[in-house]
Length: 137
Image (cartoon, rainbow, N blue to C red):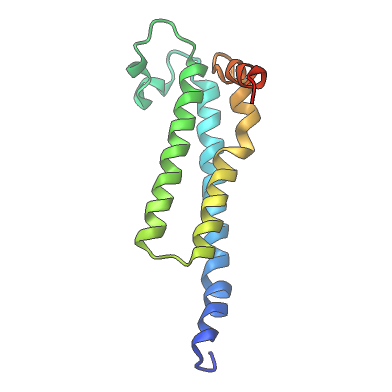
C-alpha cells in the first residue's frame, strides 16, 4: 500500500510494472531475433520455408538466400521498432519507460546481431560499409 501521495505511484509503477515489463520485452525480443536469424541461416535450403516468408517476392533467379534473409531481418527489425513506438504512444507510457523499451528493441534486434548481419554471405552489408568507410566525411 502507499501513503496516498501522488508521488508514491511512480515508485510503485517502477517496482511493480516497469521492471517486469521491460524484462519481459527484452526476453521476447532476444528470443525473436535469435529465432529469425537461425531461420535465416537455414533458409539457404531451397526446401525451407523462405517462400512462406515472402522469399519469392525478390523474383528468385538464384539469388543467395542469405541476401534476402539479412535484408528481410533488417526490414522486420525496423517494423518492430515502429510498432513499439506506436504502441508506446497509444498506451501513453511514461517517457522513461518508452525510452528504455525502444532501447531494448534496438539492442536486441539490431546491435546484438550487427556483426552477424554484416557477415551473412551475400547480404551486401560488408560492401556497403567498405564504401561508406572510404567516403569523405
